[in-house]
Image 1 (cartoon, rainbow, N blue to C red):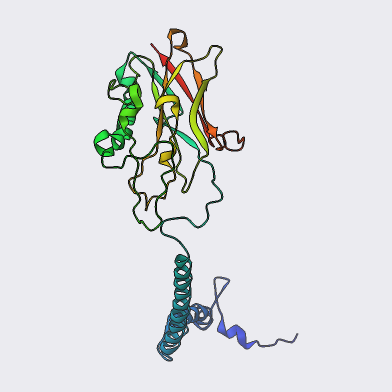
Image 2: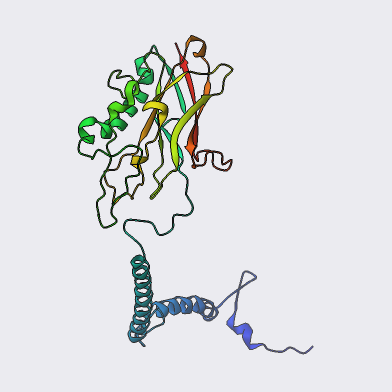
Length: 301
């Protein structure tokens, strides 16, 4: 029987029937981990080449300079574009005004649902406070600073005037809904007042004699009083020249007093107000606030 000597067996020792690896083999297995750690350290900073994150200082300086110039150019181009665009705009009149040619209607108090108990002042106080605050700019003492205009005639002004004059619209012209004879605007007696106004549109000149007409959706007609007389928007408050040129401009108002009776209490009534008597639209089904507004009222005892 022939026996061959294997020199590799000498590098192993047998202990209790198990092979024990020599220290030389253990060092060979630990070496890759040490190499990986050294590679990461060299990537962060290599002291031999002076590189940081794989680039030298001069390389980093060049790339930072490139991005500084690149983004600086983009910022300058954007600034120049905005400056050129702003030169085409007018400070007093928007360039494009063709999308909204007819005004919408809004009401004060600014609620689509006016529900309150007339026997409880705290219940309707928010509506009274809102109306009182809104009408401060219409106080007679404030309106005396404006000019007296000719009724029924457009108040056209010279384009050379940077600040346009404003026609007087005194709060006292709202009669029972002015908050002067009745500080609760009719809410305490269950006959609330609602103020209707048109949105501002620069250069608008409505034809005819625009007025507000309100109807309640119920079997019996609801009696209403309008202030000023017949709920008209006088033409002397048109045209409007914009917020900057017409700084102190106040929109004309129409106050509607809802004369509710005992049979109307504890019922939810839907009231629709439209602007009529002119060429302004009020029947656009896609925009239910164009030339009209609908709100609900419910008074309890």
